[in-house]
Length: 242
Image (cartoon, rainbow, N blue to C red; front, side, top):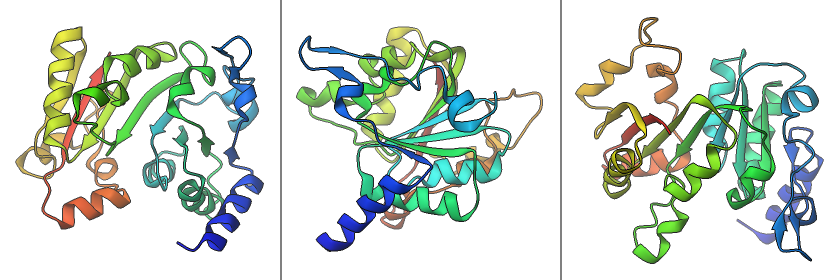
């Protein structure tokens, strides 16, 4: 991407009504070296979405394919895509505006600061789609499905709130299976080959519960999933409550 086009997208994003770009000083006290609570924490329904509908997060949303896709499929829910890359968020934010999706919003920030933006029990579900697996041991603390981050999510995720992890990384798939056992999380669903024989398990079922995703939701594909699938990578999926 040319530098000029990238700068134009940054400018557009700042003007979009469905994007929040907080300043560092809004979430971190530099003098004291501690985090701060953002004014939107506990107020997303009232101030942003103007309703009390469930709120779902997409972490490391990239171009926001899941936030926008789920927003179209579930107008009765609200979706927030979170990423630090403003030029990527531009795509999802622009599409949401063009499609008049008032239930889709984007937050440009580092996920390290995520607890600053949400209050206790404010979030219903979290989607982590194709994160960097951070395979090297010295990068383990960077894994978005690792205990350090999951402990942060628990501060604002509802007691029965669900985390969804979709990845092409067999390493990350095995990692989360071990994390579930080691830390006593409740595994709801898991498959090492989402689009294989197991896919029939994901048909919508009233008996299965409100968090069981439909096949339609699981077939939403991010840019990276399209890329990985074209290379023959097998897609895995895990759903759990921490």
